[in-house]
Image (cartoon, rainbow, N blue to C red; front, side):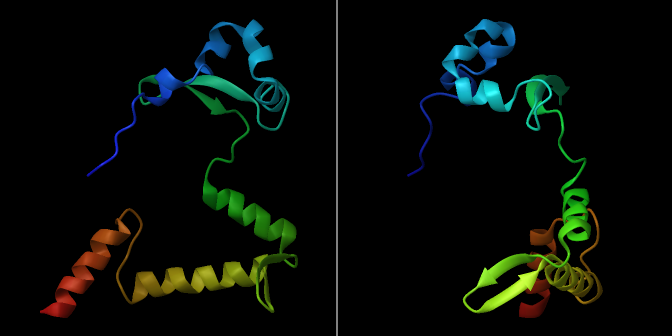
Length: 128
């Protein structure tokens, strides 16, 4: 049995109306404040894959660049706390680089290869 929503996101949301009727911002005061021009979470309407969508104007170009910036800025700050163990941004980054190298060198996962496909192939070869 699978669940299917009764309405699409576009049908269930009045937010697209804000770009057409800015005077309706009183209906969404928090969103209007957070996404206003000049704010960190400012939104703009852009064409994405042939569809007009509201997107954040100040997003990082990629998750990788966001992470590398965080590592350089907060390298000695605590990033993860688990029970009595604390890891800094730098320590987590070093471990992530080691895991990436392991996946590339041992399992042959390369840029652009979907990880599940490679894991499936590895498992298939292992079972033969």
